[in-house]
Length: 333
Image 1 (cartoon, rainbow, N blue to C red):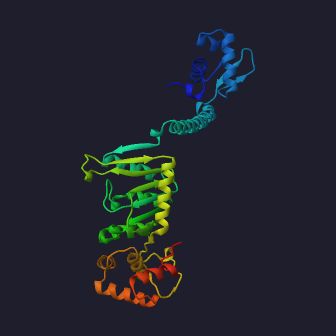
Image 2 (cartoon, rainbow, N blue to C red):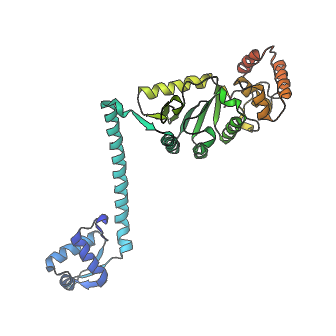
């Protein structure tokens, strides 16, 4: 094993190893052991002393003792690790600069095509595990590579403090199993909303990288493909698309979330179950699916909706939805 990584050249290393074996000796004897001229040996000894690897006692001839390796090399190794860390950061910065310049010169660098369901699934997982702050998600009905209930990386991210904002397409929420998955996500910290229709499937990480399926195998192709979109006007457009849909989407509430739900008016009339029912109703979920989700009969759901209409002074469900929006009954923090 070489000590070159600690900053010793081969000549100095050879002499230090001889010193370790001898523990302590004089200059003349050390020169004989190394088969070197005394003058050259003395110069090497002084370099070792300056690096903290040897102790020199003034005498005639000089007496030299090896410093304990574990003590002597600790600062050298620390400096080496610091230098390696700085070099790694410098390389990372240079690599990013190179990619940015390459993207400016070649538009093909802006979009990477991922092939196959397995490749897309792995890309989704890798993107989420590397996300630091926020994931934005269009959850469209059906799936290309990963069903919503299989996305365990979301819970890992939520536990790390990553913010998840997810918009579900209305058709998904008619499935009672899907509602269970949504409830699980919201309870874990996900911010969920619903929209009647979503234009594409989409995942955006830290507003710096987007994954968007391009072709699905249901369209007669052998395998689905997706695009990884990096910093560009295209990515900016995808982010803007999400922001527009998010502002228009209906918040989804889940019963039993405590402080996660804000009821602005009237605070004493609406409980968690009423809020969940309202959020599903406004999202366009059918009465039957709502009944299954809440574990009540269809008649009970219809009765509660009638009671909410009376509370809001609405004669139709459309008016109820308008009143809910105006009164901020589904407003989230």
